[in-house]
Image (cartoon, rainbow, N blue to C red; front, side, top):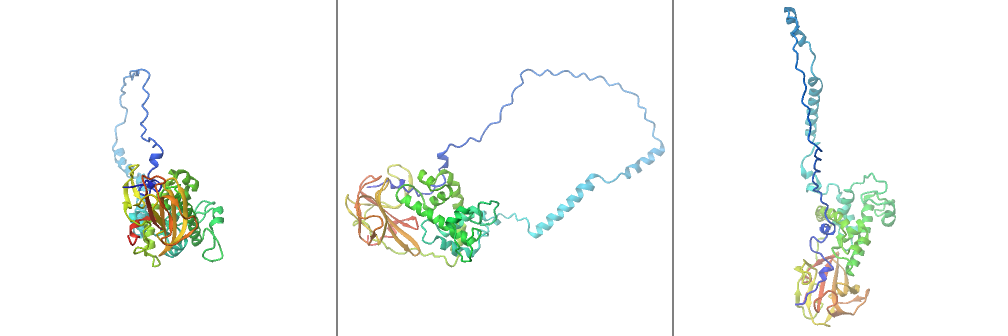
Length: 418
C-alpha cells in the first residue's frame, strides 16, 4: 500500500485552528499561594494589667417623686419618629414601586434566550435585506461565504454603527486608509461611506476575498496549512506575513478566529432562510478518473498518518499507480498552479470554474514530471503529469483532491467511469 504524508501540508481536521495555543507558549501559573506571615522576632512580652481597684462611691441620686414619675412617660411619648421611619422606610416603598413598574413593563429581561449568543434572537442585529448584499460581496470568492462575512462583521461591531473610536468607523470598523483601498459607493446613493451599511458589507467582502485569494495561493504552494476561511480571518487579524511565517493560523489570531466561528451558525441559519439562497450542490459524477486504473490505496477521511502517526483528515484519495503512469485532467479548466512544493512534490492545481455557483478545483500531487504550465487551459483527459513519489511520500502514487469553494470533499463522489 502506498501512502503519503501530504496531510502535513493541509491539516484540516477539527482542532487544527484555534486550539494549539497552549502548545506554543507555556501556560502562566496563576495558582500563586498566599505569602506566609513573617513570624515575630521574639516572644511577646505582654505586660500584666495594672487596673486599680474600683472605689465605689455611695449613690447620691434623689428619690423619685410622684411628679417626676408621672411626667417621665409623657417625655418618652413626645420623642419624634426614628431614622428608620424617616429615611429607610420611604426608600423601601419607592424601590418596591419602581421594581413593580419595571416588571410590568418588561424592562428587566432575565430570559437567557434574549441574548443572541445564547441561541435566542440569533440575528436580532441584522436586517434581512442585507443578505443579498452579503451574497453579492462573496460571490466568486473561495473560502468566504455570506454567513462568514456576516459573522466577521458581528465580531467586529455586533452590527452596530456606534463606536467611540475616531479612527474606526461603521459596522466593519474601517480606518480612513482602509476605506480608500476597499470602499466604494456600492448601493449607488451618491456617497461612499464606511457608515453606509451596504458599502461597508461590500468593502469588507472585497478585503476578505482578497485575503482568501492570497491564502489559497500560499496553501496551494504548500507554504501554509489549514482551512482557507480560518487562514483568511487570521490574515485579517494579524496580517498575511504572520500567517505565512507561522505556516498556519498564528497563536495571536486564534482567539479572533474562534470568536468569528462561534458566531457562524446563526448566520448560516439566516442565509438558509433567505429565499434567494442557493442550496444546490453538484449531483452526479462530473469528473473522469485521473489515472487509468482506479485503485484506492488510502481513502478520503480521518486516518492515522503513516509517517507521523497523527490522526487527521486525509484531504484526498491516493490512487496506486506505477512510476511514470499517465495522469490526466479530470475536467476542462485552467491550470492555477504547476510547480514544485515541499510536501506535495510536483503538483498541479486545475480551476474548473464555478458549478452551481461554487468554485470547483482538482489537484494532482507527488508527480515525477509536469506536462502543463501555470495559466494553461486544459481539456478533459489532457495529460498534466506523470505518477511519482516526489515530496513527502512513501512510494509512487497519485494524491488526488477535489475542492468545492475551498473546502475538501470526497473525490470518489465526483468520479464517474471507475
